[in-house]
Image (cartoon, rainbow, N blue to C red; front, side, top):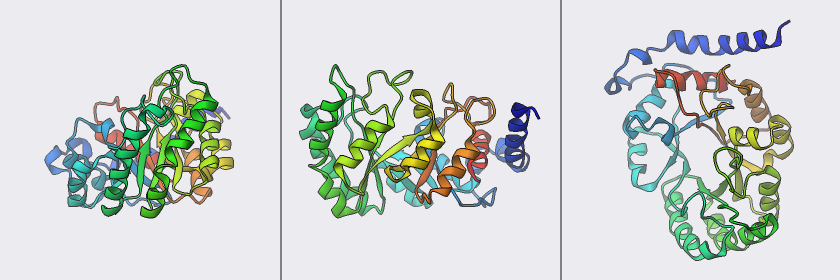
Length: 293
């Protein structure tokens, strides 16, 4: 049997229902509310990163996700949590405490500012009833990985007691340094896992970005199987290009999702692809159906 043809056929079966049944292509933004379009299996808790659907207002994105059949959005800060609450949508990964993607915990020069930022944000996250707060290693800027690791440990230990007290999980995102984030330090799962081990807290995890790690190291399924206890959140996108996760790219997301589900993971998997299709709303519905194993 032609394996490529078989793979295309499998994905086609998964998304056909979404495309055929969905009326999203015909709905104006003001009519996106109402009953959910699909009955999801709920073996995977779905989310979507807000920035990838920036052509919609947050109100419109909330209506869209509920129309598709899930209720979570990633990377929304406290200034807009009220919009999420109005729609009954979870802030599945909070942000707003970081300085930037390149200025992070690996540089002691930023520790005071980061400690102040996270000390303010952690109680806000908890008070709002949310769980996850993103953080970043920062760029190397000539620093070796061992020094950066020690610096991250020293800095993060200043805020981990507060995170533990408030039951908030700090999650450092893994990025690729080959294409999208040159010089970023937390660009290998092994480095991030060692950071988790050294901190020794259930309130510090890695945001395992499948797209980024496919580019930098591959071996996605084995890595998840062997290290899932260190991964608190997942992001998706197609490789190459960071676009739709359909059969136009190299990752087979149904198998990856099955692996995540089999580990007993109860957190969120957030879509973070940049849609290229004319109907971006239908593209999100397709992605959710592909991952809804």
